Length: 161
Image (cartoon, rainbow, N blue to C red; front, side, top):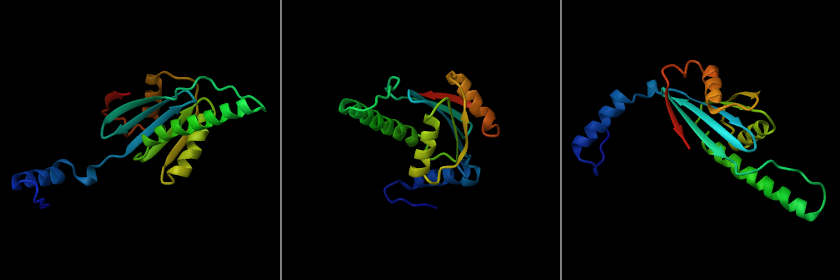
């Protein structure tokens, strides 16, 4: 029994009961995550303990146009690079406890995310990187459920901003 002197004895009993009977470690399910990403938007679908959660992150960037030469263009390129770093950091923050990660997307962003994950989260287990076209949020969720069929059984859906 775990005893915390700041908690009344009967609550310690309830905490122990919860830990032993309602939340045993051996029943802990894997957290499978799929990410559809481009430079404008990321859709993250997490499947964990029979619940599907969807998070959307907007990068806040319009289509990037690369210029050559000149100081103003260099400053714009620097701002774009810094903005991407912040965007990827937000995406990676939602992937920190994933057991398996599937990365999807139409362009360069999926490879850039894979590289950042490898550098910042060496323990991240990327199970695949696939080139796919633009998809609706529902199509993305279906693709990720298809990739993780065992985790997708009896899913209860939840959408989060």
